[in-house]
Image (cartoon, rainbow, N blue to C red; front, side, top):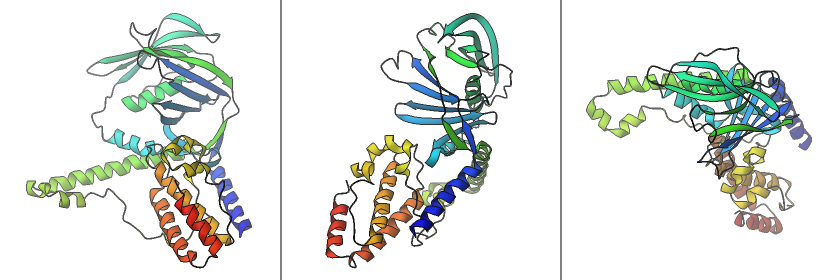
Length: 368
């Protein structure tokens, strides 16, 4: 049974890897921010890049992690899963909702202009440009210094994010490594971001960005359909019906219809989000045992009870991770696992030896 389980886990990983492209990054770039508000904080952004115009941006600002994958297709918010696999993060859904919920979002043009001024940072020369966003009401501008010959093109990251938030159709041949940037004002020298270090890298991830973008678009389409349905239903209601909040809320499908599947045992034990390396920073919001789930685990005479008990304890830990916006927990699946394991442990307890019963009770009582 163990051999079959191991084979299924390995096959699942190989199949997932086969669907995704292996992306190798040749450089790791670290940027730091300087301004009056963050001078006492460590605000940094790491960018992993390669000569194929593929970038992975990782940042922690006010303990909020944000990972972006950027290439010629566009920008996606991502999170890490097992074995360096990337997938759409929870921010993808939030991002989609924000985009659709802002019909009056600014739309204008990005204008890039070369200006006088050069600088040398980390031994690399750079030329200054202004990046202007122009709409009907006002103009916003930032100043950046670019080395146009460096093989890693971080200028794509800047314009990619700006295009998303401004709905601009900007397209320009300018590319290169941004060494410094900030507001195009007299405060530029005291309020800016700057490239702090460049290191060689052999980091890699597995990712299918085209599929990720398609999922994002499907989410946008779904939100648009739900919004239209809500508008149609709302228009059909008179003022007295609108006042009846219970009737009104019942017409809007905020949640999927429940389907009972929790009693069906999985052939392969479910993965735990707490085992994801990126969840380490979130474990402070979970009981202490979650950080050492696989250590000091009791040894039972009953061979199966340990597997079910560990799964129960681990799934409970995963539910604590849902307090974070950056978690990747399947809430319904986790609740189903917990309910199934509770039934199993209740049923099996009377069948255990007194020694195993004592170990089981002691372990459950100290889960904190």
